[in-house]
Image (cartoon, rainbow, N blue to C red; front, side, top):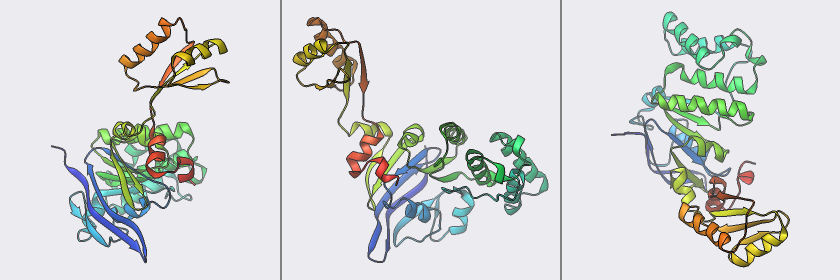
Length: 313
């Protein structure tokens, strides 16, 4: 039976008269990726700060790795790792020295410490740059080193606060691969991100936070299913074919410039077959068609009334 790595009930936090978290309930299963989404000011950072013992809640109960964050702070800190939005590495030290410093702080011992440092440098593809100052590292290398430093103590729960912000697409996908490997090893990941594609790619479950309240929770597919908008896009080669198709498919929306029709559909094979049969019965040929379903951007807009571009500012 899968156990809870993080269990939150009735979490509340206010700063003066401003309520930042208003009765939050979360259940993060061990060995999964849980992503918390929300526009700026929604309360994501405050939530992470409470879960990682950096801030005390006003009300509610929070257990991380089975320990109460209010009364068992040391036990919680021993079980978790935190990688913030900005890489917390010493640029004057080499990559190897940064990792060795963490090993010394964790009191691993000289032999165990050297082994852990060597393993992490290899795992994160940093061995060739191990003896170079971190000031010479690219943004992606610094993020990898930062996460490697978090892993020195072998935490079973890792909080990743916007881990790929500012990275190029290749570095971002490398980080995704590392996260997947960690989960395969049984590590639990609590992820906040402004990239909805990232949550879609990585998260087993997603919670959407808006103005201090959870407005939705579920798997990515569950959340997408709540938003209407599935459709089939048909493209034609001539304006005449577009006109003919529009007369047959009266519930469609046309784009004269692109020579396309957008037809509402659940995207299933049965409805798609029926649509193509109607065109065939009227001797209408579509040059191409594609099925579109709502993505997390659509979900985010529907739930918060804001786009991700606004949320990321």
